[in-house]
Image (cartoon, rainbow over all chains, first blue to last red):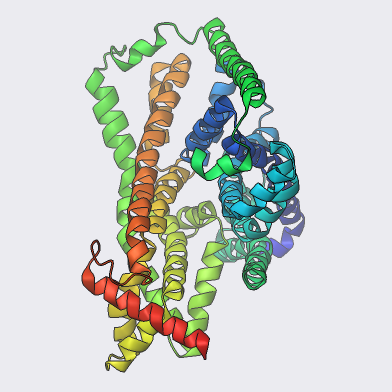
Length: 217
Length: 308
């Protein structure tokens, strides 16, 4: 642990990077994920097809592969110049996590009682009004615990960026462990603790909310 | 799928049908245009030239077998499967131990098991793999196995716990009342049913293992992504697109078939569980009669409990 305390500034920088990746890619995947879920339940065929194909491809690819594709194929195939390092990490994480957000939200939409949507339609609301005013607000209720679990996995997934030139917690563990061979266990334990500081409260919150929602239903 | 969701919108009348048709055409054009643009850009960048020939007529004195069998299959796919196959039985065994400890009546056993589960669920697999390589100085293969085992034993333990919690309490009570010890009840009554309920979740977890084994690429273990890298380093920069596409397709095919299997089993179980739920005990037609009866009794006891 001594090595970590001596390098507290390095660890703090790395911690902030992990937080930044988690939050920025987290917000983007939420927006994109909810859009994908709307695509997958929409009355318009091509949107449904796009949503299904997209989700199945990206959910079944390892995150490392998505990073690798971004790194090597984005420029030669599509001519898209993605900034190396942090921007690439944020885009890759967003493309990946959004599929899990989509699936959770979609199962939430399916869990809302049929009568709710029927009532909304019978008072004359359109598809988008039904979805945004009636169904989604109720869906998010039952969706919050699984959504938090998706985001716990997302926080841990930001570690993959360590392999692609981003200096976040896992990369800092690697550097500090190599620099302080005598204190390797302490370094890894400390960095593990940094992750737990983020993920454990999320896990507890998820359990609490799950209990609360279960009673209210 | 459209059946589940069609409740969101009215059965379309003539105007809505016309509008939907317009939207369908607009979005089809949009997506086709997007694909065409991607294809054209790729074409302009010379992606569709003779570089793909490396797959069936490789240069530099290599044969098709060297590329496909020796490199992609033996080193790549086998490299990805090997740590998964080693990790699954170890993770299952440790998860079983954790599950037994977590059901124990003694807090001394329960609390450490809970802590282990929560801690290893909250730490990135890659960090554990790095610890294996740097901290324990083990071979990258075993570092990958370590990462997969430690994480998945925690996840599987959690899946099994949820499965046990989902059983009617009458199952445990019945086990105890016929004179089985708590451990026997857990192993012979509760766990087999919990595994059965949670089978889809357990199979989906295999996809997670397959995907996580690709983290080995970052710590220098030789798996499918590494075999792509070896190939494009050998055949030159222009074949990057070729080999990354090949491993991407392979990964997606493998993982999709495992996901399909999980969905298929889930679907099969859902039709069965209509009788297993115990609401219609007479519906013994499918499913083992023993299971149906046991679940039926369980459900009855549960209703009895809530009546008190």
